[in-house]
Length: 479
Ligand SMILES: *[C@@H]1O[C@H](CO)[C@@H](O)[C@H](O)[C@H]1NC(C)=O
Ligand SMILES: *[C@@H]1O[C@H](CO)[C@@H](O)[C@H](O)[C@H]1NC(C)=O
Ligand SMILES: *[C@@H]1O[C@H](CO)[C@@H](O)[C@H](O)[C@H]1NC(C)=O
Ligand SMILES: *[C@@H]1O[C@H](CO)[C@@H](O)[C@H](O)[C@H]1NC(C)=O
Ligand SMILES: *[C@@H]1O[C@H](CO)[C@@H](O)[C@H](O)[C@H]1NC(C)=O
Ligand SMILES: *[C@@H]1O[C@H](CO)[C@@H](O)[C@H](O)[C@H]1NC(C)=O
Ligand SMILES: *[C@@H]1O[C@H](CO)[C@@H](O)[C@H](O)[C@H]1NC(C)=O
Image 1 (cartoon, protein in one colour):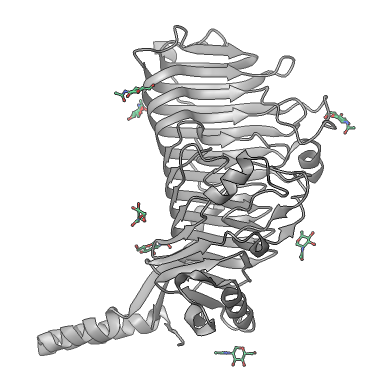
Image 2: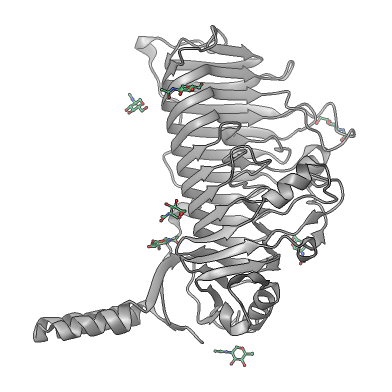
């Protein structure tokens, strides 16, 4: 059955007409009609773009019984819709049900919409996961040198693509993959849940992602990206289940996300060692707001370790971490090259942490032995302010690289309450330079306190990134 799309204006006009009717008639009959025939059969949400055409997966042979493979149904629905891409774009509606599927690819000017009771169940048949080449900025797969399994929802060289829903679910059924990873049985790198490459104008919103085989959301070599209202859940010991990994991306917004995972909640990346240096594609202009993270063995926000294309201009605010290993963590190594600079974080609340701040200059983990021993990363202009943390084992463990100090570190207005069993020395610092202001407990000597009369705030940009200027449209569809 076709879903009919109605323009915002039309709905507006209709609402007005009904309002007038209500006022003149004062009749409950009209209210019922309004509820029964119009409002309850439509759904609306905000999006980069609304679509002129919409079909349901059911119309393409989809079976939502949790057992039948729907890979073909997804492919044929999307292939059908590709014919209408240039005429106002198209939407694939996934109704309530359990839709088993392998990997499938999206198209431009396209929306995938999941009903609140729709569950995409990732197939456990390895033949449903085609193998593609490693990422050029990594040179090899993360799990295995050869190719990598295509992500469940994949897209490359697209523009204007939306994956959203009324908090519908994508279940990666990851234990199948975690076992093979632990038993070293993987021939190729594990798939992600959502990966978009070389794409522009991306929205991923209002979804729940469960048990990803590996990373959850991976936009790479892409720009103008909104990731909003996402819940990500994976066991806290599951391997490499990073939440959201913007990788060589420009102008990205991550907002209102709740993440429980076995790896970093957000991991900002840009390629690995000599491959990343050669590819030279940075992540820049990234804003992260209202993120809640639970990750006892990893970071709330990690910068790296793959940062060889550079990371610049990251702004994070209103971040909450609970029972998480570290707050903001920079990971890098000799051989990475690249840079991490102009990083701003404010208004962060942390409960039960191993480290509030962690910088690691000797992370190691190289793509291969051919990395350039002279390629030193440049780490500078790191600003942290307005934070409270309690039950913390170590306030900061800040380790630069000898002959390559990490500079311009600024920490202000930060109150850390140490755990009863905390380490004796709250701070450890090596090969770093910077200042602090209004920080307790008293920081290390390499971060001298400016004193009461010289109190200053660390920087945080007051302007907006272009992605914040983008206004979403209100789209209404009715069945
Ligand atoms: C998210 O869902 C809410 C309703 O629950 C809707 O109002 C909003 O437009 C959606 N936002 C996005 C970005 O999908
Ligand atoms: C979608 O595209 C097909 C093929 O070009 C065309 O026949 C069909 O009329 C289009 N549908 C709509 C609703 O425009
Ligand atoms: C996608 O875009 C990249 C970068 O512009 C290009 O190198 C690649 O060939 C394109 N791939 C396809 C399948 O068009
Ligand atoms: C979405 O669903 C998840 C899992 O059921 C739930 O924890 C979360 O609160 C829901 N989010 C919204 C906005 O309803
Ligand atoms: C403090 O942290 C420890 C683990 O380091 C934990 O066992 C304990 O429950 C935490 N206490 C509170 C009050 O959160
Ligand atoms: C290794 O890195 C150094 C410092 O960036 C650079 O000057 C040199 O050209 C690089 N060597 C190779 C073989 O890429
Ligand atoms: C210090 O940080 C706290 C939040 O942790 C904030 O409420 C307070 O306003 C900040 N103080 C100043 C002087 O900025």
